[in-house]
Image 1 (tube, rainbow, N blue to C red):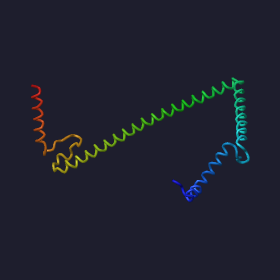
Image 2 (tube, rainbow, N blue to C red; image 1 turned 135 degrees about the vertical axis):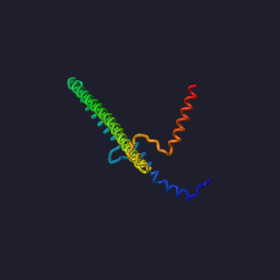
Image 3 (cartoon, rainbow, N blue to C red; image 1 turned 90 degrees about the horizontal axis):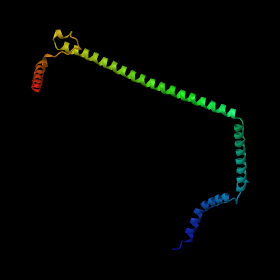
Length: 173
């Protein structure tokens, strides 16, 4: 199959910017074209010079440290002190966090206890209202926290107790 000239022209128009971009990149990598007036070999030379300078500075610092062991010992002791202070601070923060958790749990328990007391008090007040509304004036002053069997289900309760006692008696036989 033969591609028509029109297709070839359209393809070249579309691909030309891409081809030029990659040609420029390739030329920069192999050093055939200069970038800002400096060729690739010159970049390498500068990089090597910088690396050597940095290496020389590090070597001089190393020699100074090795030449003064007392200074090295002081630095090491200082680092140990800083580490010990950080460990102590971490332990203090850990202890404080545990104390806060315990206090939060105690506060939550105290809140729940207060809620229970409030609910018991409400139930006592409601019991007084119910007993007062039953029409029996002797029950109006009864202690709301003492269980009182109401007349409506007193008979069914005594029957329940009797059947329970009968079952217990049969088991013992």
